[in-house]
Length: 112
Image 1 (cartoon, rainbow, N blue to C red):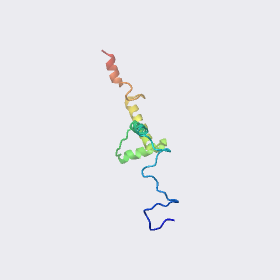
Image 2: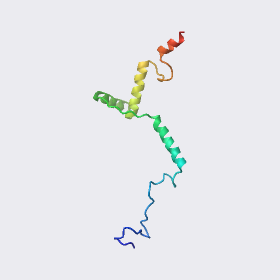
Image 3: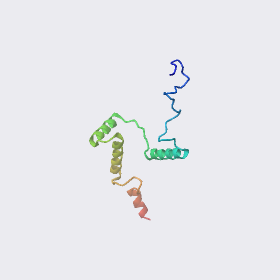
Image 4: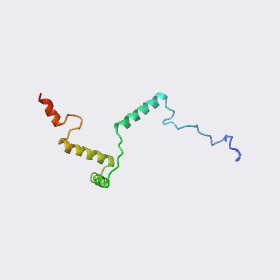
C-alpha cells in the first residue's frame, strides 16, 4: 500500500502513470512519413474550400436568413447558391464563370 503523504513513489499495484505526450491515432505512433502524408492531405483538403470572412448589413442578414429558411440549407450552402444565381443572372447563361470567355469576347475573337 502506498503512503498517502508520498507523492513521488509510484504505486506498484495500480495508478501507473501514462506515457507523456499525445495519444496515438491508431494502435501505435505514426512514422514521420505517415505524419507528413496526413499533413499534406489535410492541407489539400483545406485549400479546396477557401474561407471568406465578411460583415453583412442587417438587410443582407435578413435576406440570408430567408434563403436559409426557404431552401433548408446551411449558411454556406445558401451563400454558394445565391452567388451562383447572381452570376447566372448577370451572364445570362448557366455555364461556369471560367470555362468559356464571355459572349462579348467570343464575338470579338471570331471577327479578324
